Amino acid sequence: MTATVLRAHALGKKYKQRWALADCTLDIPAGRVVGLVGPNGAGKSTLLNLASGLLTPTTGTVEVCGGRPASGAAQLAKVGFVAFAFILGVTVGVLVRRTLPAMAITLAVFIAVQIAMPLRVRPHLATPAHVTVPITATTRLSLGNDESLSVNIGKPGAWLISEQTLDTAGRPSALPASVTDCVNSRTSPDICIGKLADLHYQQLATYQPARNFWPLQWAEAGLFLALSLALTGSCVWRIRRLS
Image 1 (cartoon, rainbow, N blue to C red):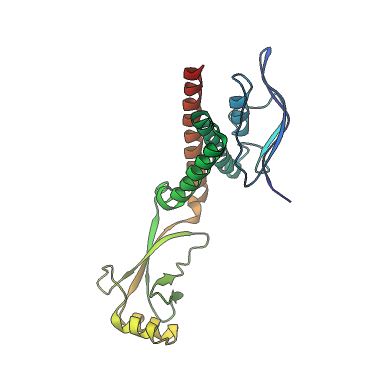
Image 2 (image 1 turned 45 degrees about the vertical axis):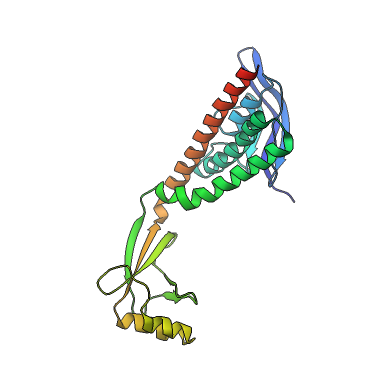
């Protein structure tokens, strides 16, 4: 069964005596690129604002990723992603005005943002913590065939960002030749780790503590909602210029 990202049933929004949106029913399945098309005043922006939780429906219901928009921190994070993707498609459609190129550009930009967010943006949304773990014979450490080390920092729920091996003086260092030779000779990893322990090496880990999970969710959702509002503004400006 295909999951539904956005579902509206008999959705409506009324301002005094005027309906900005009335009797809107739709289902948008996951994994689809969807364009929202309609004349000025049809209710496109109202629908997006209802889906992002910025407006409250007068009639009907709307669900985003199975929950009511802005009903909690977890739901707000999902709404941020959905609102950005939806409004990105609308904006590109207004600018390009050709269906297939607009869909391709929307998909390419969204994928690029999804890649950049965890790699470039998310690590800077909250201050990471650091821990230095001495390498001993009992340290819970794994040694890969590519001569990389990975240590269990003993922080349940932590998001590990990066690791770095430190020598006896506490300086960043590659693995010593005796250890790389040990790895290349396919000796037991425990023996190779024991050689590191004898040299008093350490492993520096940079991570986000579990307590930062929700602050990161809020910050990321806020960033996507801000981008969505900026795209909405540019879309409205462009439509007014064309009309």
